[in-house]
Image (cartoon, rainbow, N blue to C red; front, side):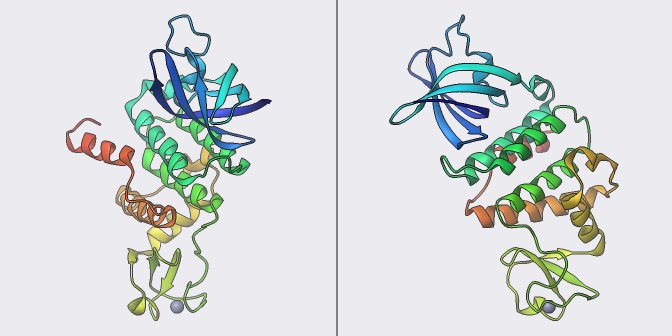
Length: 252
Ligand SMILES: [Zn+2]
């Protein structure tokens, strides 16, 4: 069976001498595993279409265990992501997120469009990576069905309160009368709260216009990572561990 769909390469694995097994997030079929035969041959026509980040229109043959790439036409190589270490690191995190949190052949077009938009914005980003990535995380987890509840206390439903925390378990803010009985609550002040709301609802390509103090972005990112890991039932992200050890070594 021949099928045609757009897709973005999220992972590559060498297979035998010259082939690759790719994980591709496609617009019409969700995450698929695809064999690119001979992709490592110097003259292969698939070299550009089988690199992580590259965005292509593919013609697949669907076999029993794999999709086989018959043809790939490049839509955007996102080459400029590879020209900047921060773009590569945060880009790898974006790819790892989708790799770890989606099931095979589970179509989610919103997620695909977010991935595509995220890589597009990232490919031109020079600063404030964390602000961008928090906004991406908030949208991503929302499209998975876990949008944080920010308008009322997730326990008692009250709408107005002075102080609050963020509950990882319940995925939203908890008011001061409720947080003493809630486990896994994260510190959150009004600046963090407003920043989280702004980053959730502002389109990715407009995020750079929002002003957020640096330490607020650090704290928010920590909360988001905990929240995402809790929801997708994972222990950690290799890409973020790598980023951390690079920053500790003064690399970035
Ligand atoms: Zn409450």
